[in-house]
Image (tube, rainbow over all chains, first blue to last red; front, top):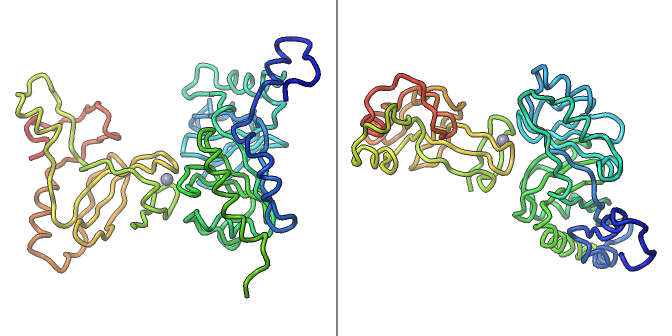
Length: 212
Length: 135
Ligand SMILES: [Zn+2]
């Protein structure tokens, strides 16, 4: 972490001192992952922006031009390139973008959203520190989630590219199926440790040979 | 556990929701004119219906939106889900226990079609007597 190369400026020092909410579990995630079966990792410091706007209003149209779309219904995800917009409610969205999109790293996404909102009704709030990101991937990832999530996660119902607010292991999360066997899970930072350990526990049986 | 059908998100577990109490309880038009007794009744007195009961629910873990629901307090049967601000739908076909069901409907339909927006304090409607809030 911090004690390696001496940072040149306080700005760089601040960045180098950042700790992800589940950093203490990094080694456990590595040893708990079962290669090719189910693997868990924390994705660090994604840029997240809370967006509240009526998507059909003029303001909504301006915001849409920045994000490349606002999803219309529960589960839908829109966006362009590496910026995605997840539906949280009829007038509430979560913008997810790479770390570099954050203004502390010179990104202009949040500022562009603020300018698009202008004095229109709604809000643009930097929520990057609100949630962390877990990535669960592998053929057994659905089985792991099904131990603590009441949604129908079968691929005939939950398609890749769908994001839903729900509960996993009684923790409120946003669950985003990013690939056929890959899920991104967004728990709030204070729940990250519990949920990380819960997922590790749920993954453990897949390290052993299947009992016929 | 109940499976509740959110108007926005579809069928979800009850644990994703929060209960918001009796629906169609309009905020008094002139709270300052109420006696302590009337104010207390508005704040704290609610029907204790046996049978179909109109109540508010919040999908707190999902879309964070309020909605109204008609639920049978005996069988837990969810008879209708309808938006905030719309009147209570007509009670569906009477339940087996017809006696209690009829008094129940009677006691809760006094709530008007007031746009009771998620329990916030605005009430621009012309609902009349303050004392009528829960009676
Ligand atoms: Zn909902």
